[in-house]
Image (cartoon, rainbow over all chains, first blue to last red; front, side, top):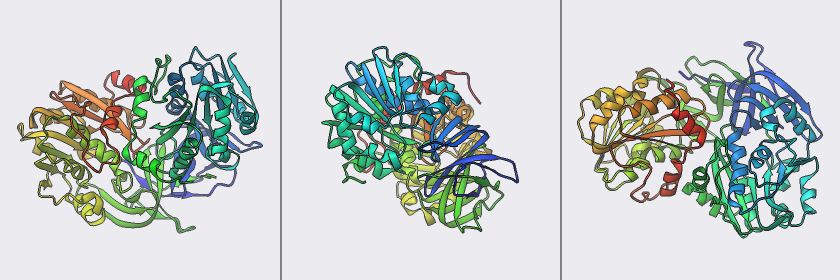
Length: 301
Length: 301
């Protein structure tokens, strides 16, 4: 029988985890919104450091395996990351006619990169993450996730992606924006000036994908990113998937395209996917009416 | 910025909610598994009683509106119940060729009944819930959910559904099993003897739907219910959807059919749906490969 209980939240100054002195239980909690907390039992904290950009916490959880939080927000867990990484990578890579050169903005953990490199036609994947410490933490503690960071086709650079993209002209077929939530240095990654720079960085048939948060807990962010992308790309489509450790478990992604239709896969899924298939790809673009309705409203942000 | 915190869980003797004496904040928490807790901030507890069958808690939450818990497990919230109720009702009612007589097992809150009665071709919907207190609590505190309990086409009876179904022969076109988790008196609702009784209670082209829990947190239950239904029905198909306040946010449903294909809608969605559409119906049967793989393994229970 499931038991209810009281969660007392000790609002988090760094460090972000604490141990219950009465029971000796260790729980890692995320404030998924002001009014909602997800708590996961952990057996150990593996890393707890302040990088130049953010707080990094790595823990071994019982439910989802190893987990990385940035500034207190769950970024990735070993058990469910495939749901997110595969939907970030394969929708564009299976619907673009010939994706050879791929840009990943953020994603220093390496999960989206790993999925991108499953595609034999990709010649080069450039990953630009501002925070070297995230990459190092993933290399050290998340081997199944960081596995492709040293692939010969991977070009990993620690730079400000907004600045980097501003100087690109037509050199990528696909761009994937694997950002943190739109706060601090990541806020600009959800705006039309950035999407315009991405547009310029893409070739003629170029396509971009951005993670655009939960329709339940981040409605205005989703609406804002969708409208901002529509100011720039002729074809913009939202799609969604399950993502257990993200707020509400229902996650959205937005595709902006210069010409190919992101909702139509033109090639088979690469071998070894666990969430993505061509049928799942098409199904993800079937939006529940409440989502369509949210997108038709004036920009939320 | 999202802040992490420590959740101290006071394992729940009844009553199930408590107030933090330091901050005067009220949080309602569900142990979604042994290793995972979802906590929702509440402004008030509306009802906290022990019925003949279970503990009933009703609270006003900030994130999801009014919420009902049974034995500490979240059953329904005003804000996200449409995701679940619509997928429970409309998949069968839009794929059965002529659904006139519908049986709902459990579902005393009235949400699935409300969705069933959106269909003009339904002549009678029989709802059998063992616990009159759940029905009364919904009538009193959840007006948008219980709205159809007094519909002239609704026949609401407080009985043991397992016993009731055992005495039915071919009188229903569609049966929907809206059960609590498979513990205590609800455990039998996930087994093949019960599915066999449902089979007998259905007409020639009959179809049943059962909620079959999360593939992440209740893997064995899902596998067990799926295998049990396959022992009885010639055509069994699993489908899935988002359900934010249920564990992992990814929920599965299993359809057993005597002949019509549950994955193929043959009629339009009724007016006013917010999650369900014909396209969402079809998309829900596109299973991520990890789900297909789980279903191909030997029965988990």
